[in-house]
Image (tube, rainbow, N blue to C red; front, side):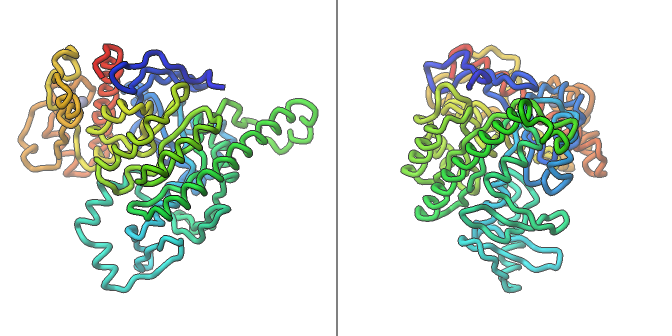
Length: 463
Ligand SMILES: [Zn+2]
């Protein structure tokens, strides 16, 4: 079952490991960063730029692709890899995150008619008073928090109903009523055709009560069983189609149907509670899914709490299956999370920050070229390693107007070899589209180099 994942080397200093995920769209060397491609595009980049940077994988969003252009169209095109021209290893999320993140009382949003809404924990919609709107929607701190901690996406749907069966919501694109059940999520994902599919889960908001987190966890477990059942039955139908009932199905199947392998990951939930995280990890691991994901982290909690939640489940993570961390990939967290046993990460941060003019900068000039022994020694130094390695520079600041130095003299990417800080600053101030492309290119390059370095450090038994 798990020919698609192999562990090449396990560290004896931590749970870090070198591995390979083999898909019909290429081999991914892990630990790996999976770039956000929410709507079927790594924003601002062409597929040849994606290849040049060396990005190994992309993560698409089922909710957005169902909303537009529709999963059926992507299926007819032969899957998202062909449809987008990316032709690389791809994951799809279940659609659950967009839906459930809004169950948090902290989340409010404004409709086109100007009405602010919030959703209570039992999923009923509430309208806020005008004063509440002003206070909750327009305070700089809440805007900032949304920008910084909403690690998954920027456009979210209006929920109509959450039940044990699934979720109904209105599309933000055309207002159409869409229903996600475990079965529908699996079918949408089958049509989209990503190499990895996520089981439909309830992403618990933060902070949630123990009672609510437990309810959401139990629902997630029930839904995982339904996802597995659906995937198994879909496989049986497909096999049958090729044999005795071929004609019966032939007319309904599009000519370029998705035929490559798609692997299911179960998702561990449980909120910020140790007992629930352990229960959920144990349950999900008893199911024989080819991979496992950790969900419900980076939803508003502090970094320390986020790391603690991953650490809590790290003792339960499978040795023979890949582990994905959903929606986390802030650059200063990654090395620690690799040490807890995470193999792959997806996060919008490098690309989103790039479009805001935030450029990653390695603090140690020789980090990418230096020998591993130049890294700080000692346990505490190792703990602080990742946070000391990078800072962001805000290229939109006026000081860069006069700076004719390369964007980052220590970076070997196309952008840093060819353009100055002043030019990039100019592009951003003039809102020239090339600016977003160049910043995205550089940030993803830095991310790829970081992961290359991490793999090298595991290989050298340094972490
Ligand atoms: Zn660069």
